[in-house]
Image 1 (cartoon, rainbow, N blue to C red):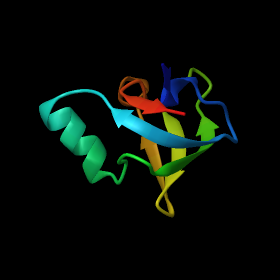
Image 2: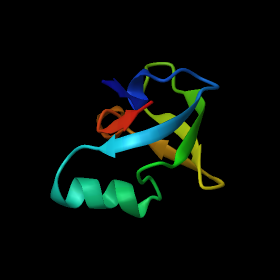
Image 3: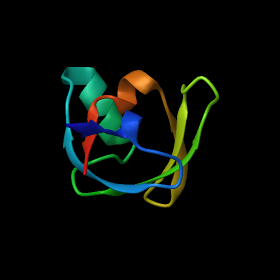
Length: 73
């Protein structure tokens, strides 16, 4: 299983599934990250946290823990 955390800078990936439960999953979905959406990985901080992505035309920063819950292909 590949997650968004393992994606490299400059990669464009598609969301397969969101893991997690309750409020955490709802928060990720409220940010516009849903199944079959394409995500472009813009930057990764020097220590790997946070990850800056472009989704649905806007920039977003995600923590490693949140990125680990997003399964990609």
